[in-house]
Amino acid sequence: MKRRSTLTSTLLFALSLSVTVSCSNPTTESKAPSSPKAGVVKLGSGLWVGYLPWQVTQAKELFKDNKVDVDLQWFPDAMKSLESLNTGKLDANNQTLGDTITGVANGADLVIVMTNDNSTGNDKIVVSDKIKSIRDLKGKKVAAEVGSVDHFLLAQALKKAGMTFKDFTLVPLETSKAAAAFAAGEVDAAAVYAPFTTKALKRAGSKELFSSSNFPGSISDHVVFTRKFVNEHPDQVQGVVDSWFATLAYNNTNKNKDEVNEIMAKRAGVSLAEYKDYADGAKIFTVEDNTEAFGTGNDSTYLATSAVEISKFLLDNGIIKTKVDTSKLFDDRFVKAYAAKKQARS
Image (cartoon, rainbow, N blue to C red; front, side, top):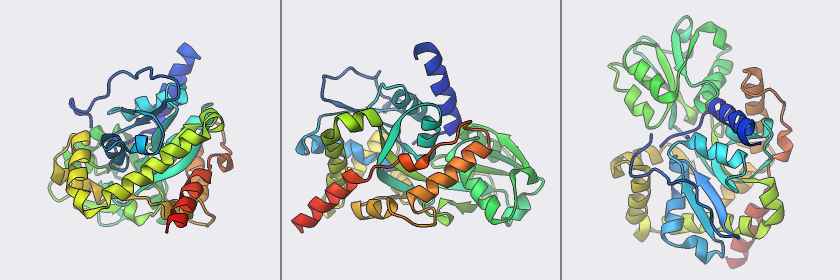
């Protein structure tokens, strides 16, 4: 289940503009993007645990129940889904807040309409047995994928401890390679996400120093549409949002839980036991969670605040070159509309 790297998405987006204007498993690889008939929402997704409920939506025909026709395209390489959204090949995609800000900084016009989940432990800083605290990283080698959500997680921990990236040697490696380098003893710590955390923790004496559970709301995943599609087809956007919450209701029914877990594990290309382990590290957002996240507050559990923090991180580290007006990123009317319908039914 592969997450995103904002640095890679920046490079892919720039490359795609020059010519025209994201743990993969053979059984889960998507086909080349199709050309569905008019009126179909082209929705992309990587294989992150917080996106897998969409497979249930499709399998149980819940899109149809909510009067929306969706071409759901899975991308084992999530970077491809980011590129496809940023260049108009998709109408919508499942992606992080950081990836969305990066896309906007590079010219895409995107709108976040819903939160899928927050990482609550699947993103970790894994360290050797000699490191007891964040301050013990001074003078050490730390591997991380520059621009990734785990790079941002590391930055937050450093800030809390009064440290900076200058206090150690940052070894820039793609996440799978960072985990391998740590497991081989080539670096002292690594910032990685599940399932690469499992690989890193195979090193004798290794342990989790901290995780995304220590920074609630800092790593969030969203359904992101192009602004053009939202403006032209709000009814279809509403249908997608309604389908998500209908899926959560279906998944949370006791008699369905074993079935839906099997569906999601199969899509991810992992065992049922592995899926359940990873699922514990992400909080799937209900409509109530969404309503709160779209609200106003001073910590990173609120999207507006988190967006400012992430945008500053991306700008300060040279991952984006243009400051983004994050106030224009969010459109909560579809979540509010679903909440109103739910209230009316109760």
